[in-house]
Length: 84
Image (tube, rainbow, N blue to C red):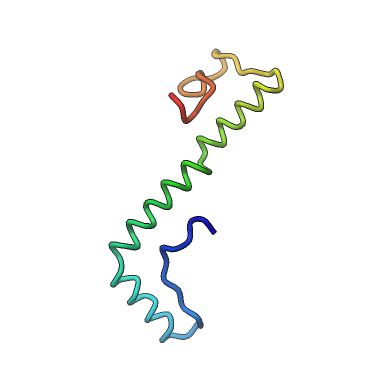
């Protein structure tokens, strides 16, 4: 998967394995936090609500049903949520 790589894992559901995983996560917190933040930003840019709205507006326009500016406000009035 594209966004994996910033996690700690355990192979069994026993207290020792889970405790070791937590200790590794705490020991590597700064690295894991930076990787998680970068992954969240990348995910939002590739899959976020803004991109969904842009795709929806493109389909609506393609189907000859453009939204009138009086029906929407803000970024949608420009027929883009992510490109201002």
